[in-house]
Length: 79
Image (cartoon, rainbow, N blue to C red; front, side):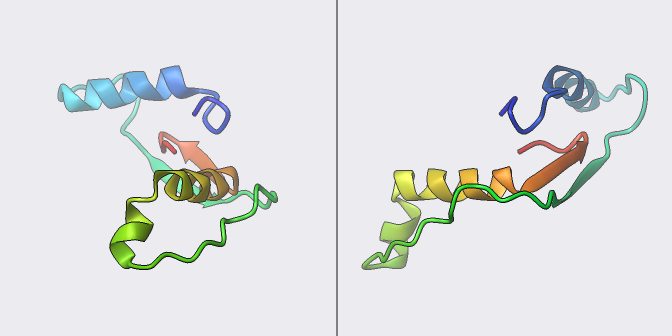
């Protein structure tokens, strides 16, 4: 995750404070947008059923990696 969110420790501290009803330096701000970079290809795989697709862990991880690599996580957003 640190590859996609280099300031993770700072963001984690803000999230933990929020869960405790506190504010460190500002309110949380979640902003995501396409980052304009090309990432790994989205997997192309045919599944016999919707259930099989959602329980195919390797497929889901490949989809998540392709999506996260193309997303800018701004402010306190997390992958």
